[in-house]
Length: 403
Image (tube, rainbow, N blue to C red; front, side):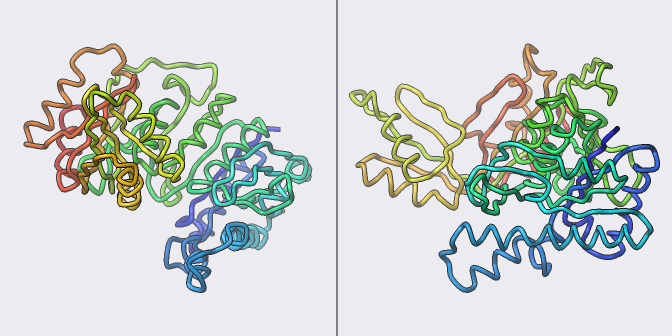
């Protein structure tokens, strides 16, 4: 049995006409000989009646403090509604189809309500339905804890569901359908001459996603890597080939590997960042430990950490910056903060071992008189912290320099 997993985002299933287009994509793949498993997100986006954010707002109108267990029950409804509607669409077109909630599909998670992790997949019911030649529609973003409670998987959870099902079912590949035609070299809202990438590696797309690109959730990519299952990012509303994600820039044939000489894959970014700067007294060698322990106990995540002999630098999301400063000042720690920052990242597996890449990044930004507050790098990324008001200028400068 050759299994193909497809995942359709909220904009793809938002109306009856769009669901009919989705159904045609599913039928087309089935006619080529695949057994079809289809994962769906909730209908539409914030403001649409059954979107996840809309459901959250309805509950929070009653109380700002909402029980997370009960919120998960409400949030799981969006995918159930879109899944049933898509199943009905396919049945009306004459195809055998079965809808399963996350629990019915055998998605078993931990008990972290609102951000659960998948522990295992028990796909017996899916396999039974596939053997009966049914198309199986599965609600993304949700599962069942080992205690029998409904859970949700956090942002990007439907991507995660699709990848986990593909691994459990040993699928041929995963197709992620959205409203763009693949992974771009930069955000097209900021850069007018972006290109759609034909292929990227798992590591490159993870870096792009972690640094702000929203085309796929990095957790889904990491899951697919477990069995080297290729992922394809495609557009629901056209027939463009999209972007292939796999190991080493290979083709969809898992045994075939193609070498690429591309140094930089793309430019990505994230916003709403505040830099925290803490002077380090010469007699306080344990200051870093106290700072990070205190923030961890307060549930505040930190990023972009530079630990130097005389100064400690890191960033937090702007919505928790005031809380972070208060926590540290309560420990009599001197704090300076710079609000309105953004992080811009240059990503590419081909930069590893290549001299002069950092120099080009700095050159591109300084030519535009863009101040760099911090920088860091890994084998596949170079990050710079800048003023958010310079973001569009920075992304365009780096895109022009490298792409």
